[in-house]
Image (tube, rainbow, N blue to C red; front, side):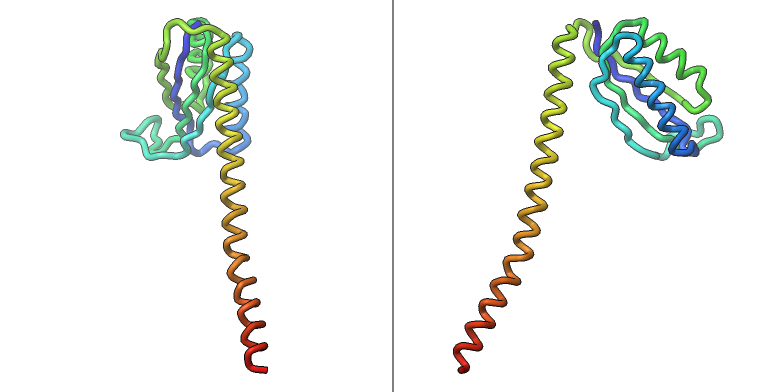
Length: 150
């Protein structure tokens, strides 16, 4: 098994539903061909270096996955047939990878994502507490001032 990265540019004028269907189709091809999807990263709409099919912008997506050469052939064949895909490029990242290594990498990525979400949540909570704390201190200072004047 090998580890690949495919970057493709889809038509920026696609409706969200059509774009979602295209992405689901690509994910299904990877799973159907016994591949392992490691990362599906949408980079969003960006300006193209040159005009492609009369488009000046494109929606960039980077997919990292493990599989065989047949998977890459099938994925590229479907991209060639799709009018929604403007360009694509596949790169071989690693030549000899086991299924267990790829599955471990997927688990580690999921754990790291969960930890970052927890850290963001904790950071947001401490920011809320920091905003609330000075308000309480001001109230207690006002009570002290009232007692001093009496």
